[in-house]
Length: 273
Image (tube, rainbow, N blue to C red; front, side):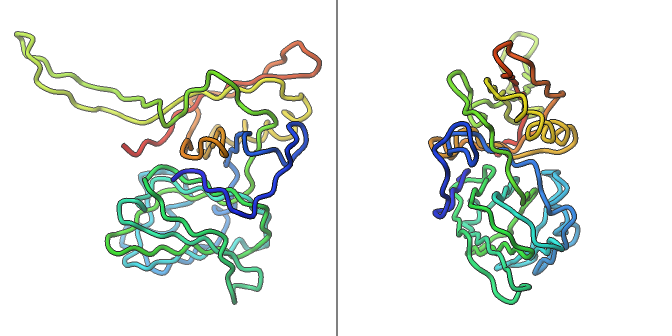
């Protein structure tokens, strides 16, 4: 499981006016959770709920028992249209994950989506804007210990143009560093994986200069320090989602055609295999 498109999502078919259709990339970099109050049902020693908001995939929340809940108070009602989850083991333990929200002070919750992930790849739930202060993630599983490394909740950046031909999906672009072991006589003695992950590039053209300055520039600034979720073609390739970080600054450039700009985003990402 990667992109989960809520059944209530209704989008414009326009390629120039928002809300853009689901063949346009969604980038989930904004999150309200770092400033929120988190209340877990339980947490194992050394694995607090606060670990899910720092962006670090090795730092995890592990509830002591299942079923488990993580309730979030955003302090004030906020507009949200995406949820991202990465570095989890939901498929391994056979988990069912319910995402709910409350608009009455947490007295009652409305189910937004129930998910049963088929793998441990990053998840990006896309839904129509919900304005709520309280959110809850509930996890049930027949056995095992749940592990969650990163969670984002906020408003996704929807790219003004779709990505056309030539894109290499991040799930098909593994980056592995090896150390080969060879004997003095040239015999193969095995191989050690030193580092692994995924990485690719995303390229867009014909972005209007005004749109870039208003909507894309805040992302450029944020991703200097903050990882992000990205789904390059949610409707057609829902399994191709990355939890990524950049290795350098992103610099849109003028195309020399009207006021259009182009940009290439190079990113490395978390891999689950």
